[in-house]
Image (tube, rainbow, N blue to C red; front, side, top):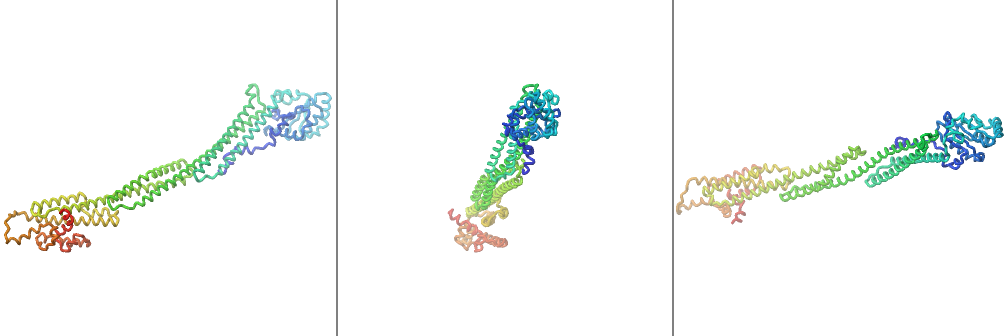
Length: 609
């Protein structure tokens, strides 16, 4: 864009670099109207332009400056090609004296600025003045300092022998149509149009330079204002161009008017040159307009792309700020919950955050897509837009992935706490079941078998709740557990083991009771000697009663078996890393297996009673 003057408006430079004429018609309009010299438009046989000095009474009184200005102006009008041939001068002094002829030749010889080819003098028609002129021209030829022939003519008929009548005006016996006022009007119009073309080109050049040197703004508002200002200025210049083109077209119509009016009419060579001049100016104007339009299209596109970029950057900052806040809020959701209720609340909060992030995420995706469209449309700021699109998509992916990760963790946490709750409820239900089994009913084979069936049915539910392997259950969720939840899970797993142990012991006792009742027992009346055998019913006495009384008289076989099993269990527990559990702690203090069961369910039994 810095090479605007060279590459954008070459035709403008051509217009402005044209040779500046020292005078224009409007500068010497009064002198031209005096009509002491005219450029009729006629040509010699070799194409030389003809300048005529018609009869003018006060020729000798014309100021030198006026004479020089008019002659200089007239010689500047023909094309350089025609002027290089040399001018033909016709001096009409048929009604004047020899003195006027002499004065005219002297003035022309001393002040004519162009290249002369030939001088024709129509000498005075009166006999005496003609004779004097013949003698004078011979005597004073050298004084005129003209290096071209001076041909003295007696009449216009003689002139026709040198110049065709079609190139002479009617005053000289020719047929060339010439109106001096119209000629002046055409000259001023052509020169005005040329000045309009030049000034328009200068305005376009200045505007183009300003556009090329304009720095692009860094914000939306300034860019919009600059685009609006440049667009308005462009519209005004386009209006100026349209007016100039209209002016040239009107002028061209006026110059061609004689030919349009009459098919027999022909334009003079000078008029044809005027047509060519106007057409050339119109062509230059058209070239300038095309070059300007091409430049403006590029500049306007860049301004629009700049505005698009500023809008994109503004939207990017807003969306990124919102996404960063979302990411920061999401990062604050580190809690995975310590209960089902807490986890469900956390899931609701996470859902709310996800819904809250939907609109910013959609805006970010839409903005990234818009940025990619700008890149596809050959935006000049590709290096600035592409990284922002990548950043937007990265943040969206991070938020989505982090949200999924949060849902996965909270989902596992919810599943864990539900399983722990189920396990805890199972334990409570198991303890309740054990406590609710009446000891006196279990003394019979049918009662013992019924109790065993109840226990077996209940133990089946452990498999339904996937609680058959508590340690495997614990290891499944080990990676997401906090120390607090690990402790709680370990406590519940330990409780599961304790309850399972209680069921195992109860099953062993019940199976033994059922086995003892395989032979029928006949009831007999009590005798004093049978009193020592009354200890056997104490075997099936409820565990709570046994515990409360702390009876040391229970010496039934089940108790002996339970103590042995309890001792084995105790040794097993010690091999598992010395984990202390509540059941084993009570057993170590001398309680029996049944004492173990009832110690776990004292409170429940008290409540029931």
